[in-house]
Image 1 (tube, one colour):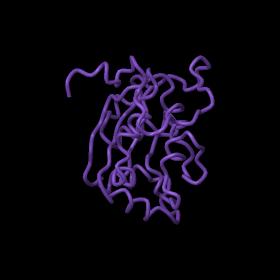
Image 2 (cartoon, helix red, strand yellow):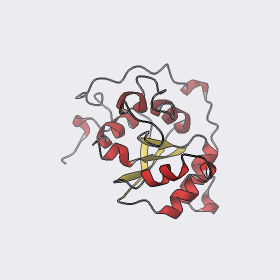
Image 3 (cartoon, rainbow, N blue to C red):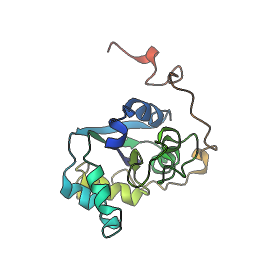
Image 4 (cartoon, rainbow, N blue to C red):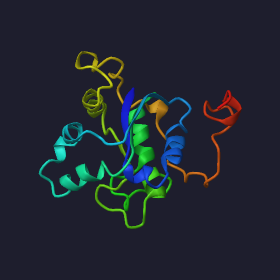
Length: 184
């Protein structure tokens, strides 16, 4: 299963990209299959991406905030990726996000509105729609590899534990640990 993630400018201006990527790759069976950086996200794509929020009080600020700095659009792929990534990211409102989640641990105390560090698809249907918008897949390929039902009990997550303190590295044997790196 694939899911679309956007690391937003409020994360990159605070130099949180590496911490967020490290957490997203903490699942041994989830990997990045697509990554593209944007200095500025195209407004037509943003408007299409956030179409369901059009007319809401925060919509204009959301679109505006997405161009305050560098952004990364990526696709993560692995079993139950949509659900597992959403649980790791935490509640949309950073003030309500649990400790141990990306938004809960890395938020600014005064974060409100669109400043929630990262976007992740909330369903496999949304993932397909978003990947088409961002040009990751073509409409005729939209269901290729995405039909997996996002409810495999064998892959259910345990309750989220607090993330290790800053400076910790991926566990030994993880594809991104130092022991598996072949020259930088």
